[in-house]
Image (cartoon, rainbow, N blue to C red; front, side, top):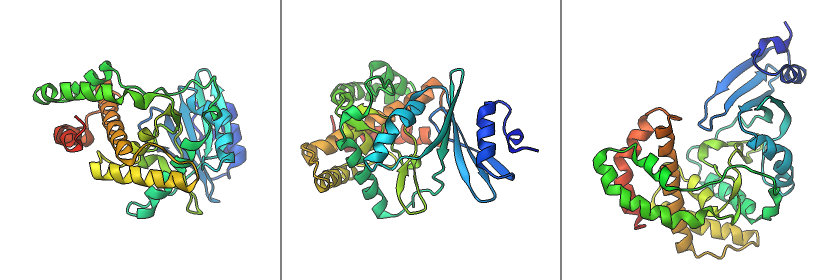
Length: 300
């Protein structure tokens, strides 16, 4: 049976024929799980060769790989190759380079390499993003605060509402178009090529905002004030190393990173209220620790 007949009939025929010409006769298909709302599969054969198939209901990443990725690659930013793209109605299908190796869990050099890549990205001219590029727009609205608080017990909601409303106001400068930012460089969105190069493989939220947003997101979990201070100092060092100094003082940048981390948590809680994410252990953990965590950051 031809390879394309092993693939889901719901996939565009042109996509199935393209994959049949790209891979061998013996193929396997594995669905991967993410939280971006896109459907993602790994398709491989016995050579072994493999590709990532991504189905998205928004054009953000298709536009990125067509209009932005070539310029980033030319500047040395490690971005997956896009082998082909298809569109069926409002649905976009991307055939992407597979980055199959996960980041080592306890390698102290990995975060420094991530910060180096982000420092380079943030220093690029913002004109690399085409004027017509209409992707993700970060923001923290009163409605988002309400959604986050709706996840919490009533006593915690009453305690945190004035705190979060104050932080919401303080965070607004983070969403101004200061630099090109990836928008979601969380640790699960990185992998390693076979040569050991870290690659960020989810660019759906590329945008223009404060570098602190990316720096907050690469810190796993809630993070601590000490971690944010360390990342701030490391980032300034990496910017100096590429002769693109970052003029914000380390203490101020650490505070911005902490504020950005609070925003990411509030945005994440909103996904539970929207029904995008089902209640799980992560929600339980945040609910249990958020009040003490906010106090520990000393942002109020």
